[in-house]
Length: 483
Image (tube, rainbow, N blue to C red; front, side, top):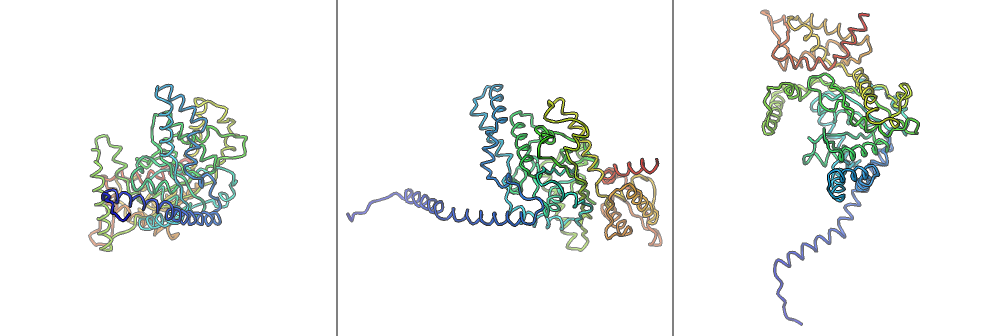
């Protein structure tokens, strides 16, 4: 009984590993999970105490439950059966694809990360780069929206900063869920973005099974009261103007909407604008068919160079933030009221019959967004300079033109943001943004006092990009004030 038994070293190591795993699984992991679950539940309770729009049950449902609910949804099952018949692949394979799509799409919302870490990181990034302002908001009307209604924020898309800006400004009211493109499906962005409630969308996917899974998730989220944030344009503006709206997500939301039912869909138009869009030149280059497509490596090096350049300016105390970033929240827009006004019901129409109606609705939403775009200093100065491309302005002349344009826009109800409520300071900010980037050429007179300004034609497309942000409002002022 006292004899020794030889055991291979590899077996000892393997046994030790399994013992450690068993210990963690049975004793430590449940405690860790309990700790984080308790912490998250506290964050949920705290959020629901102060938020006007409470977190919906769907956002708090376990992700695996949502995945299974989506997988075995009758419409999805029917689509999987049809897909299997058309492609000839086994039903089991089709359902595996459905599961993969569901896992890809469905977010893993974490209230603690969203309201604590998310709020902190959004604030730090925005305050580092911009002076952030909530310009205009009908908060009293937004707070009166029926709590059973499904709310959809619809906004223009100027920058990838839009996601951060709107989430930060709306964080005191509600938790938002975004549709994000495949650009965000990289580690460590993917787990972070999913924990913040976003869901992934494959832009332009022609796969009917994928589209059906995505459609049913969007409908589940809207019906479940998850507040959506949607860009009707579908992508970033490449020239500062609004793009033609894409109606895919909007049509998904409307397809099963019952205009006689209890739940309404309420759209809230949100206008966004920046004194400087970080991606402006990259976006404009996509309009040039002769421009060389940049490699991923070049994009990385360009970004690093941009960061170091600005860091060097900071060290020399010559760095300015990129002006103002502002958002305006417009009047809530009831889908039920809209359908009653125009006399049609989405559920009663086929897709072919419905598509033109949905396009009209998308166009109406774009107009409402355009009407609440913030008019920022750089947009005003860019518009005046662009309208007079060959003029050599004195400081007084340029300032007078900017003041006149500002007054015209205010007369039609446009929301002109004047920093410190001071037009002179606003002019100074806008002009500085353009001269620092050499979009406007500054010439100092012989006496060193008199200065003149003119458009730098080498940067005309960039100046036009900023003028286009308020083009709709400028054209409206011209039409309404000349009648």
